[in-house]
Image (cartoon, rainbow, N blue to C red; front, side, top):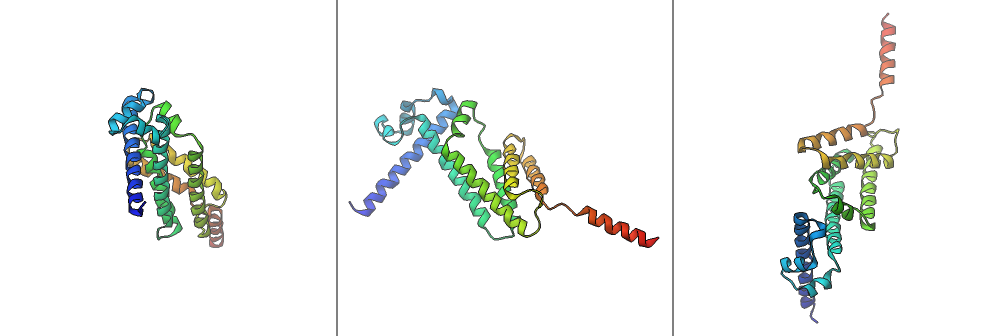
Length: 208
């Protein structure tokens, strides 16, 4: 079979998969997870039921594929931000800001749908990749002396992710910016106040 023909078939399969995933997501968000059937999906996507079953065994499998595609796209975007030109601190700010807005724009799913989308090995693996990405960036920042040294970068990465996930419940984009600002402020190396105070006291002492 000619290579071009193979590529055309592959492109068609991708197009069908994408159409099925988008159709399913639209139906589930509109009607709820338990109300959607494979027959509805096939009809709305404009394909036969038999064709649909060649791609996916059930509705949950379609939603899992949809979620995985979005998670992968988010990780790729955050990786690009990490690798862009700029200082470690600037790149960290870009990554944390982007992650906060991903959390903010995340659809507010019903409990059942949310439980379905946030389970499984793929999600756990993606969370670990995200944690590692932020930890590595924090390690770079630490080498510049701008990161607090009383907490390990690995632990700080966990704090960042937990803090910024809260963006999903914030009322506005302005509040998300404030959350990112507060999170970044907590990562910075604290001012060495005792040394400054000691210097001031010595100066005052000599002044007497």
